[in-house]
Amino acid sequence: MKRWIPFVLWLLFVGTIITCANLSIARPLFDFVGRHPGSDKVAHALGMLTLAFTLNYALRARTVPLKCCRVQLGGLIVAVVMTIEECSQIWIPSRSFDLLDLTANYIGILCAGWLTCSLCAERK
Image 1 (cartoon, one colour):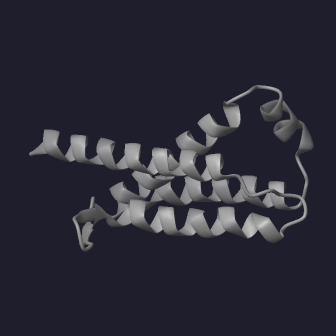
Image 2 (image 1 turned 90 degrees about the horizontal axis):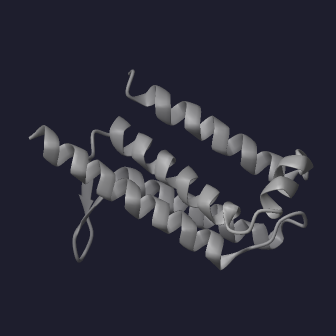
């Protein structure tokens, strides 16, 4: 059960940020990010890296087969959910869909997969 605590805490943090953005609250935070070029993309990548890594950890680096390879279940779940969330911004007046945000999310998820594999290899 202890493995799930980091994931749940980070998920609550990410969920709070998404909710604030959807409701147009916490404007100073988003204005600060907007004044620093590239910081939004870095935040997306680091946020998803952390979310995918903590979920991979909670799931004990479980993998699932796809047609071409095996992928980590945690990263796959995060990728699907974040793709849906990013695309949902098309219909939320206070938000805007950004393909670069989605790309940064995927980069973070891929880095989490690499990090999880590296740590698992070290333990063997």
